[in-house]
Length: 173
Ligand SMILES: CC(C)(COP(=O)(O)OP(=O)(O)OC[C@H]1O[C@@H](n2cnc3c(N)ncnc32)[C@H](O)[C@@H]1OP(=O)(O)O)[C@@H](O)C(=O)NCCC(=O)NCCS
Image (cartoon, rainbow, N blue to C red):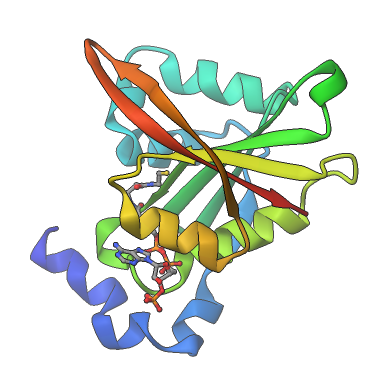
């Protein structure tokens, strides 16, 4: 984190409810230049040619929902929720949860997920997600907001040749 950035969300501020109130949760509904450039900074891989636009097109086409937490207009956290299809269309998967490191442990992810949950269409009854069992902080967060473990998937994800297991969690909303 750059020294100049630290003042924006100081430790004292982070733990104050007043500061949490200043955080706005917005559904991403347009692929405007500002949103795209903020997401590219947030997810450096999105900087590849046309990738951000391609990903946002899926959101704008209604294939998934994306929510952003903004502090003074600046993107500080993101989550994606993707409904499943056909007989599983009452189930949606939560992925791509990320909070800027300098804004963590202040309730931002909690606020973001709970707000996103409320904005789900009525037909969505169950949220699912998987977390790396080594990611104890994330699992603690999910359990705190009502997710329950329903399984364990060996080799749940594969990046290159590296597999990671998955702790499977669900919440009835
Ligand atoms: C996991 C992550 C999303 C948490 O975001 P956050 O805004 O810091 O979470 P919150 O402040 O809402 O945390 C709520 C509670 O969850 C638990 N928690 C969250 N992060 C934790 C951590 N690193 N260690 C231990 N507990 C943690 C705590 O109980 C916390 O409450 P407390 O701060 O009063 O103790 C954030 O650390 C992150 O972006 N990590 C990298 C990406 C990632 O792992 N995403 C999840 C993939 S499954």
